[in-house]
Image (cartoon, rainbow, N blue to C red; front, side, top):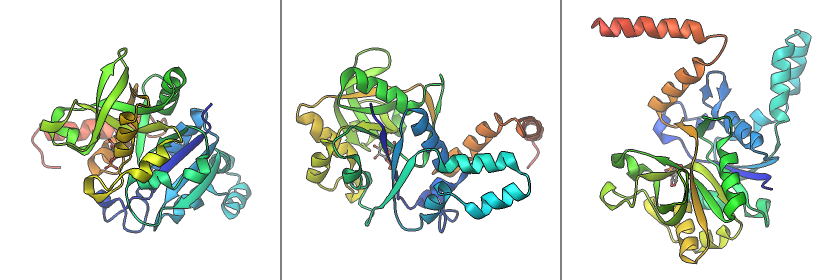
Length: 297
Ligand code: G1P
């Protein structure tokens, strides 16, 4: 049973300036809830009880968000806002959440390495803190990976098919399909040029890792962008003859660290939000009609 998760959340958010100058990108709201809360909720719904967030400079509000806020609770209680009170309290009761600081921005592999003492000798999940995975069948994406880990053991990555011209933004795998969703991974490469990519199946922000990964992270030289890449550590682990699988997850990925995806994700989630869905739909239809009519908005 995998009960521990690591959420790397130390990156600067340079694709989302100026909003992320003083606020963590993980705290940007999708409708009324910060991205990181959806990520924690996915972990918890997958059976995780213990979470370590790897944070860096300017990320203190992440700690505050998951801590209790007695003043706010008293205020809400006094005003009889019991629904809000319950939702605020629930955040601090989601899981045991711990924080560790990544001292230098040395890459995702290094961020995961900061969790070594926390995870000890158990397999653990990794969920990137700026990316939502909206399940398409009710089974959380991380749980889908755990199911593959239960079948085959070893490390597991979430996979997504992308158009070939977009592979250079991701870790890309070379693998053999075992069924329509599961792949045995033969090799992987971080952010290749499209011409060098072994496939268009890319790593999509969720991992199950076994503790032997740490020695491969230690041995990994700086890779793409001069950073310690988890992809390189996984690749060395495969070369060492250890099993690795990929699962094309039944989930839609929303990368909230990029402005266009962030806005689209907000619209999608808002259209499922009981209080505002119908007013927003009216607004979108009105604007679409104006656009079709050639009006400038
Ligand atoms: C990281 C990983 C990459 C993966 C991507 C999306 O890249 O290094 O292998 O495909 O996340 O999960 P980043 O988006 O941090 O550059």
